Each structure stands twice: as C-alpha cells, then as structure tokens.
Length: 187
Image 1 (tube, rainbow, N blue to C red):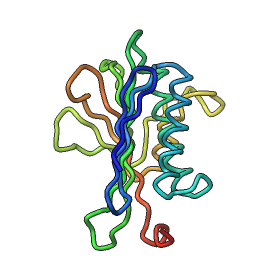
Image 2 (cartoon, rainbow, N blue to C red):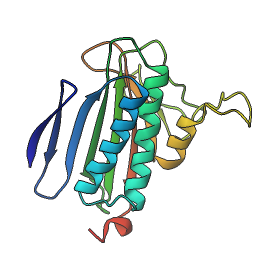
Image 3 (tube, helix red, strand yellow):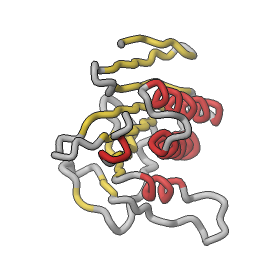
Image 4 (cartoon, one colour):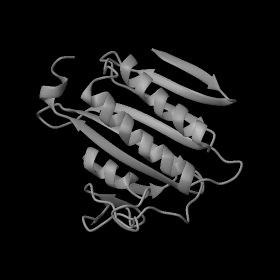
C-alpha cells in the first residue's frame, strides 16, 4: 500500500511492504495541537500496521513519539516552521528477527540540542550523540513539573540520539524501540 495524505498543506507519505512493515512521515505545525495530532496519528498508524492501541508496542512507541514531538514544540519551535515526524518499523538483521520501531522528530532549531547523559558513546559521525537510555537530568529537582521527557524516552527506548537535520538547519532526535520476538509472535 502506498498513499499520499494531505493535511494542513503538508504532504505525508505512508508506505508498507508485503510483510506489513512500513514507514510513515508527516510534517506538523509546531504547536501543542500539532504535537497532539502527531501523537494520535502515530498511534493510529501502528494500529493500522497490526499493533493494537491497547498493546504494549503501540503504547510504548506512541509514548516515545509523544515525548519527542512535545520536545520539538517546546524546545525546537521556530516561528513559522513545522516539525516532522517519521515512524518506521523494520525487522532486525539479527538471528532473532525482532521488530525495530524507529521514531524520528526533526525541527529547525539546531542551537538547542538535548543533552545525552553519562552513557554517551561516540557515534559514527562526530556531530551526533547516541544515548543508551539515559538523559541528562537537569529538571530542577524531584518535584519539578517538566524536564523528564527524555528520561521517559530513555526508559522506554532501546536507544536514542540526536543528529543534525539532513537537508537543512536543525536537528533530528530519534529513538528506537525493539519488540522481542516473543512479543511479536502473535502477529
């Protein structure tokens, strides 16, 4: 299935392989409403691919997407510029054949990069950072109402990182969720 969807003047792409593994991408306005829509469409797309709304995979990947798009709106907002969400699912190349769900959120604000905490390791590119699930906790104390988004992503995802946005100014924050073969055996 290949289709093009128009929403708010932005074009999105939805594609799917014969095995039901696919990719979804769309641009959204950099507003709380755009973030809410992005999160809902990510959950809907996962459901369309066979991962039900109330399932562990849908709930986890949707929570990751929700935190990343909220951060793009709050910390990556540039007036008049959208953010982009890309969701992809593919089978891992290892012997277990687990499913990997990749969430990428791109915004045009490159000077405000999230910090990756103590588990940082150098990536292939000198200007990218990869975290093994720990964000730098500068949330202002245990009772702070904000500052935990990347900690949540770090707990749910098997890895996350930040890279410069391809083809323009800004950055792309990505996270990957790996569904064990036992979790996906029902599909």
